[in-house]
Each structure stands twice: as C-alpha cells, then as structure tokens.
Image (cartoon, rainbow, N blue to C red; front, side):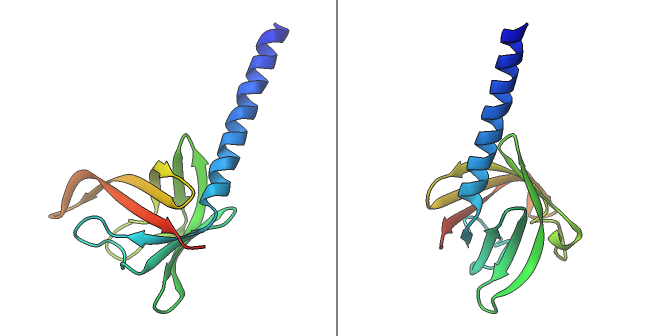
Length: 131
C-alpha cells in the first residue's frame, strides 16, 4: 500500500513539474505567423503569456486587443474570459492544443468551424519568440 501511495505522489509531482515547464517556456511574447487563408489575426499581431493571462497585441499600435486567463491542462492551453472574444467569433478563446513548444517556436492547433470558410477543420497558429 505504501508503495502505491509513493507512486501516486510521484506521478502527481511529475505532472505538476511538466505543467510548470510548459508554462515557463510559454511565458514570452510570440509573433503570429499566418500559415493559412483567410488571415485570422493581423500578420503583425503578437501573443504574449504571463503567469496566468494571455494577450493579443497589435504591433502597429502596441495596444492589447484581446486578453483572457489561461490554464495548461493535458497539453492544451485553455483561454477563457469575456475579453478573449472578437467580433465574428471566438478565435482567441478556447482550447488550443500545443503541437510544438520549443525555445523559439510555438505551434498551437484548434478545431474551428467558420461558416463558408473552414468547415470543421484544424487551424494552426504558428509563432516565433520575439523576447
């Protein structure tokens, strides 16, 4: 029984450490790179992450256009909040699967439905780190 408790705590510890490592890698400013048509965000937009918030920043004005709280769970970044929506859709709010998170690159994917544009497909959001 003691052995099972030790294993359970070890697994919880490893999962917690992994989440912290992902969050630490994510906490930067990332330049959005449009890889599909139509362009969902301005090609000069940046996404930034701090300890618990995510932001979309327009580089031309340096204004924050969207923001919301985020959590990391099972290799997903989950963005929530009333200010995480934009006119015409919730392209920033929701569950983004982390496909790649390296030193200088970030690729997120999200299942989207945009009538007359994308019918139940994955949309990839690619970024390069700028800070």
